[in-house]
Length: 543
Ligand SMILES: Cc1cc2nc3c(=O)[nH]c(=O)nc-3n(C[C@H](O)[C@H](O)[C@H](O)COP(=O)(O)OP(=O)(O)OC[C@H]3O[C@@H](n4cnc5c(N)ncnc54)[C@H](O)[C@@H]3O)c2cc1C
Image (tube, rainbow, N blue to C red; front, side, top):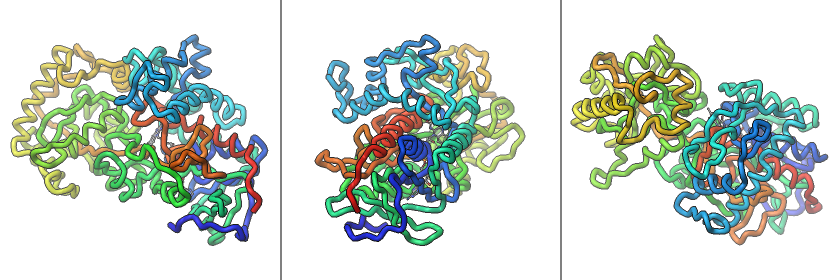
């Protein structure tokens, strides 16, 4: 991709007040908001279909102190909400008595803006007919057990018509398109922005697109809002920036970090580049169907454990997906390898017969479906052989493609220990089933009736099943640093005039956190709304 071209004597093929690049939750929210404020707006989308990762999503959105909570009488005080977000965003820097809770001032300001304007953004989208807010007030936050979480529940919402189902993204996109039609927002698919046009002072004047009409220059009189998603599908950016060996992810395949490259050329400073919204992902599904695969957001089944290549449990199988993913990056300084890459989910016949499904990346297929990613065997010895063969077949890096020599013996010990914990109800190793979110996840599949509803001793006899899991992204969440209005910043803190960003293409103020279900789209609605309002009010340079 060429560096931003700088010139004043550009001939423009078209002119709009505002150009929005990307048509997911961030792009449409910014576009609709700017159009409602009177701007002429075009949305440019690289893919043949609008929606990006948003269309694949369930479109839950996490918003503190939202209208449904208030209507239900659930209190969500500002101070504790900020503490909850800050503590999880920057756990190693969090300082409750510090004026910005230990966070850099601009990140704290963003959390404040999210608390103050998150619900306002929902109201604005509802008013435009783009969104109908629904939800139940029982669903807990991912860290509802922490003292900083005062309401514990009620912040996770969804498009009403989807009722929390996996089709939420489709419902959201329908609403976006209806509102765009009404507001006269032009939406062009198969039209990637391939370059930024900058004025001599560095102001963003417009973009170069490479669409059906060929290469054209489009002028943005007021500003350009990038909303192009993360860099999940650029292996080099992933390798250079992410904090661990992610195997890929379930973001839209067109999310290749284009804004990282264009904004850098325009002088932007990058931030939060090491972080991604993360989930375990079924390795073979990722390899065979990179466009369709979803992260495993709920690992169902009381008789299911996850072990590493040595046959040892290394995580709480019911913990939120984002938190589980951290376990893959554990490093063994003696072998010089990642012992938890990949991890292996193992379950018994009862799980196979009762909790399989197709939603939310369930690694267990529906009962009696012969899925290519499932490894099956009649007994544990056979399972070890079958897993070893599959590990070799999927082409992992040297050393990560083999089981430890004592895998089966370790697995037997692991199963016995897990079974004892299940019988007693207390997981002394990983505290499985202790938090509200784990119980809510288990309830989705019908909780077990043992001492711990998330645990059951696996059957002493086969058949057994397994699948390989790797660390995946929903998408990345680092990129150019922006202020609360979405203006892209240089290293010296000045703004690049006319250049805005929102959504997963820019640095997220959530840092390393995933606060609750909908934790990506909730802030996206808010900050894209603020960016849309700001750009619509901007007076750009003459060009
Ligand atoms: C299966 C699944 C379920 C999920 N469920 C939820 C959920 O319930 N709640 C939640 O909060 N999050 C969820 N997520 C995550 C969520 O979908 C994303 O974080 C969010 O939708 C990102 O929105 P966005 O607008 O930033 O990017 P996207 O929706 O990815 O949109 C970016 C768009 O930009 C386009 N683009 C890229 N480069 C260019 C270019 N150069 N020119 C033009 N266009 C370009 C892309 O093609 C894409 O359409 C889920 C993710 C997945 C995969």
